[in-house]
Length: 198
Image (cartoon, rainbow, N blue to C red; front, side):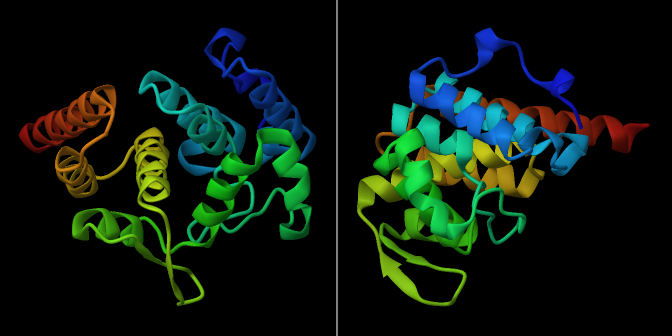
């Protein structure tokens, strides 16, 4: 993995904290850390942030998207920053954005986020097995972040349908996100039809 695979600068988040986050990610070799689909971790993180920008997500959610798996997750175990370095990430992207990143890294996701959104409950299950309450607005930010994370990776048709159904039932979900999810689902279905016909 090398920096030649990075996205053009004009497509990156442009605020000072996001630029500082990218510098931190580069310092922690995220551009050389393998991720899904033969891309680097940095490419995935930037791709996730770009979707959030296109969906007009709040800046804290965009910054969280840019760093969402920096502590590792239940699916991507490699941490680029240690848990005891939380103050560093808080100074870099802000406390609210870092709190989203920290929570995202600790959840049994995506299942617990989708389940909580569908049930209207603000209870989420952590990877350690404990359940905790989160504010409804935080849950919605986590859901939008998870959708961007999964869409950037190219999710399965059933998962795309599940996310789209969940998002369509919620209030406050960005219209651009719903359109992107619908388009992703349609492209996946068309691709599957083409393969089955050949």
